[in-house]
Length: 122
Image (cartoon, rainbow, N blue to C red; front, side):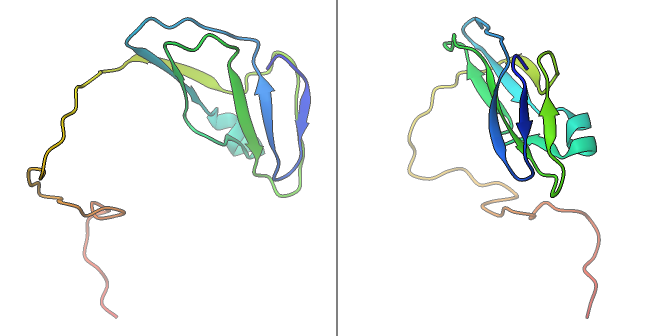
């Protein structure tokens, strides 16, 4: 963080990092939460991961949320509030089709690949 702030319980705040980067074409940076802040203080990122594309040149800012129901959380300049993961990205070419090829999963979602085992009978 490049500035001091306090996040009240349940509140969101935009925190400046004082950091700017210039990614080469074909790369992206993901702003990710810090597990220790989440576990110890209930602090998370509102939009996780935050995406920084290669064309962005501004200061990286992080939207934090305090999930703790009772305790405020203070941030001081120099505090590590997030982490940055930089990776290459593929840039595929898409084309429209009338139908998609089949798969074992088909259109099943939301838990369809869940955990193994049998359902308990009632």
